[in-house]
Length: 307
Ligand SMILES: C[N+](C)(C)CCCC[C@H](N)C(=O)O
Image (cartoon, rainbow, N blue to C red; front, side, top):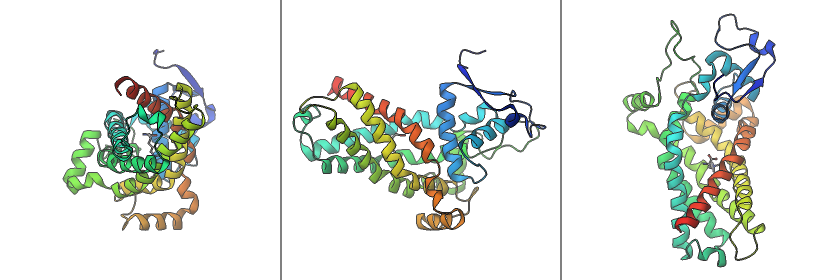
């Protein structure tokens, strides 16, 4: 077994074997598990649960994806977001720190002795969220479009998927809709990120201050816990608009074209009930803790080294 396959995730053989007459690839009985697979599957499952109505839940989505698209299916649309993480987070944290600097006129070091007010932290977070949307929107659109392609890769005789990969997806969108097409759903993304990133930084600051004696820098453990909970809380608040954002990004493909954010909300609620706003909440929150714990730890360390 490849060293990449670190463990095996047992699944009832009946689940994998049933209805497999026309699919040969997956081995019956187990899905090989690797951390990168786990991370990608979380992102893919979240997007599919939010935009497609064919899945009964997280487990059903994972099993169906594995059955129809094999392990590779989970990595769909991942190269672009991975490449974009550094850029998007640099913009977010760069704008946040500089706005805080402008508002409080204190450097990162001085801020421990003179902590900024929560209103300033919130405002700086909202500004960071607003600015990051410009670079996040195209990457996020391509990710959502690729993750929603359920066709298996390279199966002879089967119709090819609409997009062959991230670059083909970007070029096709530009050709079909012009460069503005790359910003489809950007309004919903802005509504999602501007206030929730304010909440994100306020939660982080508040939790750090609760666990740190006055005037001192927070310990790594405090940073990890505060960052993790800031991620969970901000994703919990952001999930309703995340669902709408993903649906608007898919509009015209698997979904009808909506007249705007409100139309998308109203028609989703009419067809699927209020529960639609909580699709992907569990998976978003589970992913949010480790991801944001690491993001804030890196941010604090970088500021201490270079600040
Ligand atoms: C505010 N909102 C919850 C929308 C996003 C928070 C982003 C944090 C991090 N980049 C992540 O992917 O978890």
